[in-house]
Structures are given as structure tokens and as C-alpha cells.
Image 1 (cartoon, rainbow, N blue to C red):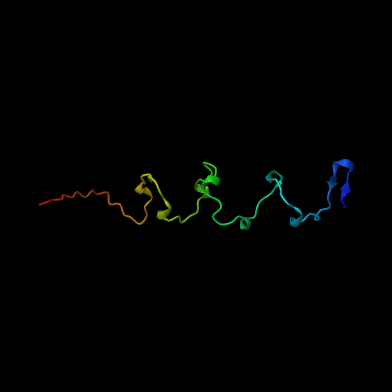
Image 2 (cartoon, helix red, strand yellow; image 1 turned 90 degrees about the vertical axis):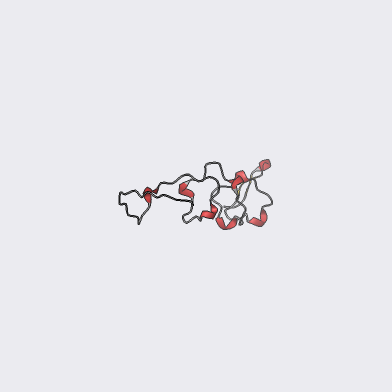
Length: 99
């Protein structure tokens, strides 16, 4: 479809594929739709200021996070999920003597 000039109101239709990046000087973000490819976001440009509070939950965390990445007070953990242990049902009492 060719470009359609509509009197004093300007262009109301542009043929698909006729506007290329070099033709665009500035573009308001509100005009953008769809997804931006991850390859186009530069490394280290997204930080905590760009992430909404509460947006990162267990489902969005990677597995294999090292302990060195954890900060702050950590909750107490239960030993109930430990594997490879044997319960004998016996209690061991120990006395420590300093002398």
C-alpha cells in the first residue's frame, strides 16, 4: 500500500516496511509495544532500583545460589529435611570439666 497523504492532517497510512531505524530521530516510549530482546539490554544496567518491591520471589530465583550471596539475618532452619542421618532415639549427655 502506498503512502497516503490526507490533506492538512498529514500522512495517515505508511506502507509496511518503509520506515527504517535511520528514519527515526526520537520515539516516545509509550509508542513501543511487545518485548525487548535481552541481548539489547546492556550488562549491569538493571539493578534493584529497577525491580518492583516484592517482584522477586522463590519462583524467580536461580538454583545453586552460593552462601556468599546471602546477606542479613537468616532464619533458623529445621534439621527435619537432613538426609543421610540415622536416628537412634538416644540422647548423649556430656560433661565438660575445666581444670
